[in-house]
Amino acid sequence: MHLLDVPVRLIMAMVSNTAYNGDFSNNPFNFKHYDLSYLCQLDGNRMIPSKPYQPKFNTSNSYSRCYMSHFTDLGRYHKDQDINISYSEYKDGYPLLAIDRTPDLSADEM
Image 1: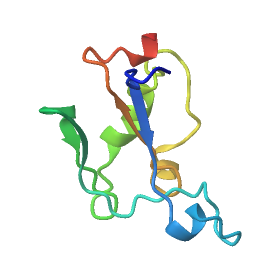
Image 2 (image 1 turned 180 degrees about the vertical axis):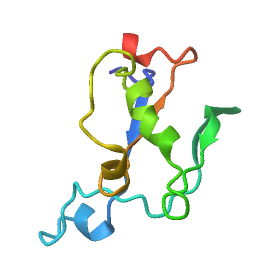
Image 3 (image 1 turned 120 degrees about the vertical axis):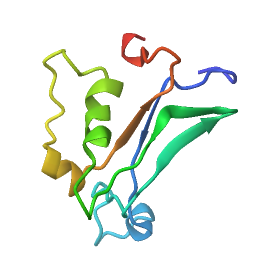
């Protein structure tokens, strides 16, 4: 990767500070949603994705768009390639957030 290269895809997850710092009693791969309610990336004057993620993990279990981003932004949608994470498992340990940063949403083709 060169100095001016920009990643075409971001995958984000949140973990407790103690697990991040290496406390052996905490699993650093037990990701949590921490009641995330809004997420987008700002690139100059452009929001990515153009409609920000606004999941509701605790109140109405309305996080399907975040879940589907795994399939679409990782290039698995309509390709018979599963991510082996169910909708309920996503909320309880795997709330990874994927963002395709390409203008035409073609990161899976690169």
